[in-house]
Image 1: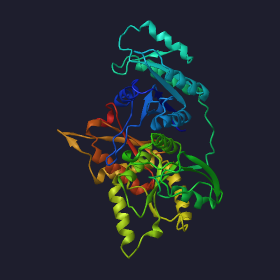
Image 2: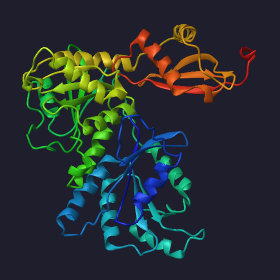
Image 3: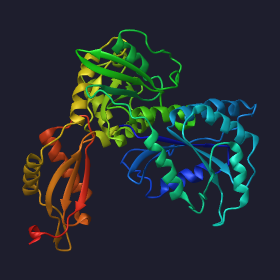
Image 4: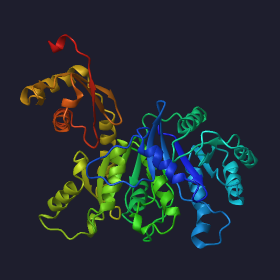
Length: 443
């Protein structure tokens, strides 16, 4: 099930980004650093009281401004509102509420979504009586916080997650595979959707950024049900001139979150770019099945070495996801698109593959005999056993005598041994380490 999305909205300079950074910077937020992946801080994966959700940061909204950029904020705000399951509406507690606050409140009421009215910059332990003026916005009880001093942030998060119980959970067909096509603008994602469907269901244009929203299209092939999610192209930050483009990124991230398999579409005429790494990194961090589709392969002049050279370049540039299969396709000529869909089914199965504990530990014991665990200051790492705790992505928990001795390099070695025996093609593997209390095995 996809995570709930919480959007933080409000006027400029009310402290939204300070609040977001405070949450994302603490251990409240779980943001893993993946080697080789650069990520913008437009969202944070947050865990609070066993609730996982995505918090998104937004730009300031000035509904009445006639400035061209500011006028686009109304569209921007609507996208953020539409995307979110819960909305944190932040106002400045040092000021009286403004006409802009009232305008935003009206927009939010029309959305008919849970709204948490948050009064920021309440830096004193005693809350002034002026906070009660914000009741006039008609959005319920205002919650006083201080992002700078981290006051009442836990109380606010309690209120946010309380709303999750009211979010409707849609039962999904277990046989349905949701496929998100992701990549930078004009790489051919929409053309690929049209080729899969055999019709022009999605607008295709040479103008980068044509697809602003994530578009779901169901179809069936050989008895297998798919939902194709075509997303807005993710642009380099320097090229995001319209603020609304930032919310297209958020929609793409939401599409990744609710997909089973992501097809990372790379333009063969441009090669792997920094933006391609970032796009792939989002899917990798989300633990989704991944296929790298090099599109427009028909436009590349080839010789006997072209395929191997391009494949080597992709592997070098996307070194953090060597597990992902690479396919060279053409949406224009339908080259290898049938095989691409076959690979989608295969990768989806790999992402949900479960290995029995007995068989898994046979493999781990053999790996330990071949390569002894590391030691430090006379103390050697002991691996008691390993078990698979979950799928999508496959997650393995290793119980050891001392977590500090479980070096990254040795855990990567064990992961490679798992892959050698069970493949897990197209899916990341999560390796966790748990320290087990002393037992008879330590003797």
